[in-house]
Image (cartoon, rainbow, N blue to C red):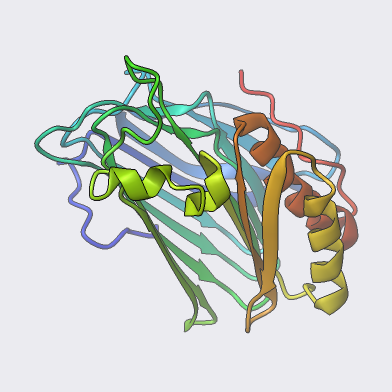
Amino acid sequence: MVETAGAVPGATTGELELRIGLSGGKSVATRQFHAGALKVVRPHYLDDSGQVYYITANPGGGYVGSDTYRIAVDVEEGASVLLTDQSATKVYRTPDSCVTQRIAFRVGAGAVLEYVPDQLILYRDADFRQEMRVDLDPAASAFFTDVVTPGWSPNGAQFRYRQARLRTEVRVGGKLALVDNLRIAPGEDLEAMRAPTYLGGRTHFATAICFDPAVDDALVREVRDAVRAEGGVEASVSACDAPGFVVRAVGDRTEELMRAVQAAGNVVRRRVRGQGPIGLRQY
């Protein structure tokens, strides 16, 4: 099982481990472990591709200061999993500390991992730090997203959270393919955050990252067209050195950003695997 750097078993608020393999033409969990404030809902199969669909849940209802979460998913050769969460991740005030989430994915040859969580809502004085490491076989496919939303504050002001830091490291065949380090810190300069040039004057932002050996210039152009066709957002799509792409999008509504990043994933599903659009059933 993949381990995240710095994780200390037994010292976390919530832990989740999954290993996905093949059995009888379907993807199934060959190992499943959860502890503390993380668990998984029973699996579903949303189409006839054999891809297994898992939903994670946090019974506590939200993250608070000093919480530490660890998620590790190992997708064995030829298996396929779509992973989401039951509802938005809500990070409340962390006045003297931060919330840390460490995620590790390993995807084998011919395997597929799609991680499309609901929005991350950062409330007043929240500090959230996520470290994600993705280790891919050169013949693996991975697609994962983040959508970040400023939470409600008593006076209705935006950008009251302290910090959002999302660091993603992707290795393909053991070689570093991408380091994506995004840090938004409104607590350091709130006036700058309110300026129309910051996030293009928008309040929400999203990222989608994909690596797949079938990604080429034509597919990237199709992704770019699909994302830009979604109303209400401003987006860019950049190709990676290894076969893949990164989507950046800003907007004012979570639903619009979710549609934009899923539009990118849907192009890959249709073009590469003949699957229908992502359809998340969160129950």
